[in-house]
Image 1 (cartoon, chains in turn red, purple):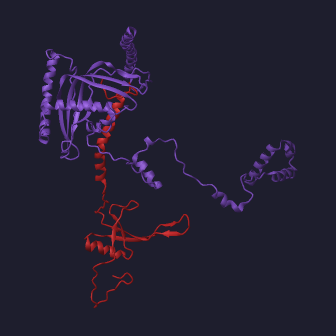
Image 2 (cartoon, chains in turn purple, blue):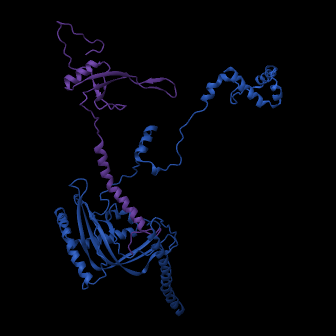
Length: 150
Length: 361
């Protein structure tokens, strides 16, 4: 599929089939807080709001109320030494509004990792607490090995 | 209205200039007299200018840019007061990665962090006779506790066919003696085979620069398994077994400091030691070994003798009962000093015995 020219369908023409479109959509976490029924995507630059709507309605069977798109300018940065300016690519953002009854929550991928880490560190924490207790027990013998019971 | 306003101004002027009052009383020449002071007031009016104005206004912008406002860090805050989330957000703000953990030498921890379901020794164990009332009660309680340990022993035996609670006492005593021998020799590589990673820092604490003479003289009672427990860590297949063994033995301990002065104990006096030592094994591991894990020190055990050296007592104001115990410690210091003077006397006698044969020659 060419990105220079979007073929317009005329009645009577054969219907073109596109199997590998250049369109893509990426679900991103919004930078500002959004109502629960608003989903934020980063989409391909060639996509229009109608493409986004069709994509979601016909492929994923989602009820879409409204779609707004905007192009966010890429970040510009000046080189410290030579002074030339670099700019990141512009990004097209789409804000999809679902019906009021629907609500979307961005998934949390790393909660299991935190739990596992806490469980693993439990043993070490117990060891440290035990050693602290051991030091407290031997306060009256400074400088002496504290292991012996005699 | 205009007349009233003019009257007010006349009154103000009269207050300012008292000398003109007599002239104002004349009805005919009022207007002529008031004209001159007004002119004087207008001429004498002061004008205020800004004191900080610079004489060269075209560089005003550059003068402003000369000062850079910086966000100064709070130098008085302590590292402990900062929470983890706060620290992480600060690092993100400054674009700093967390410090890489320094793994100069990788270490492997294959033991649990402490004792699970610790054994509580009966009070006065090892001192009461079986015939007395309390001794008989202890026996009864011992039988009650034994039933739970039997289940654990059976579990251990399912992993380790050779395990026997009767024979384990001797094996445990051997591990105990080896561990203490290597500790006294400061052999930190061989001691790892007999001591778990949780126990290692406690054993090797303050051992550097000390000379330790330790001897296991004899066993007063045969070592006995009093407690056993099995637990899993994180997964059900990862099983650890802990066995508590009671030792009643006779030991000799003397610790000398780096100048060769006696810090603690004596090479002559032997002492009876009653200990409850916990051994641990990773029974899921085919090559796991029984290792010394920890000690159980009962509350009823008499407090350890304090060090004979002079040290500073840091009194905790939060807990008043400890202050009393600190006072007791001071009393014990005096006692220990007395004991030391007694210990010196027997040392003197062998010297005399040495001098006698020289006299004979």
